Image (cartoon, rainbow, N blue to C red; front, side):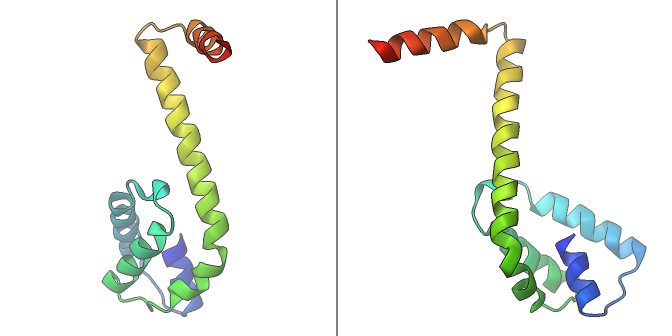
Length: 108
């Protein structure tokens, strides 16, 4: 979405096929980005260069990237916590017992 914003801000028309290729490229290159602060800017800069879009567009995104980065990190953390709980349930672990044991150990 940020790459399309940069293209629109630069007045550059991006055909639909190129948009699809750009989306697939970003999906592949963005794995693990949510856990690394400011890594999305590096991925965006690489994508802009690959698709011949103005690299100066990263400066446009820089102002709001802090807020977007916090949102990405929050969603990543929530997803990791949910996945952990689902796998624990799938394996037959009763999470209430685990929490009670942890609380008992913390009191001692």
